Length: 178
Image (cartoon, rainbow, N blue to C red):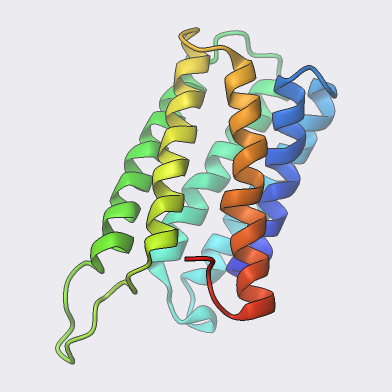
């Protein structure tokens, strides 16, 4: 399910990245953000159920990301000019992602059987760090501190390095690139 959601999320990041580089129009990007946001929240809820191993860790990443996407949809479709609340949502997302990065790097606590609560993963830890940078860039753009073009380029790069490559490496090879 997570891999399907990563590929689905790429369907938002790519056109939004191009939009910030002057290609595309706002209302369609807003609609895409709504579709992807809804799917991401539903996917996060499903991850928290026994059907998907009661994976609260993944759910705590997917649901907040879905909320960010739905917020993006709202500000675009409603024509909101003051984007600082979106920026503040992204700032909170960066905190959540930093915590996730810590757990991917360290594995968190140790279970009675000696295994980590969260499987250690250098690649996923680095992905979370990259997503922290992304959400901080969103925050900076919404506060007028950084050019939207920087955000556009970052979204395009991370569409592939943070979504497409890890998803298809796991689908096709059963492992992450690192």
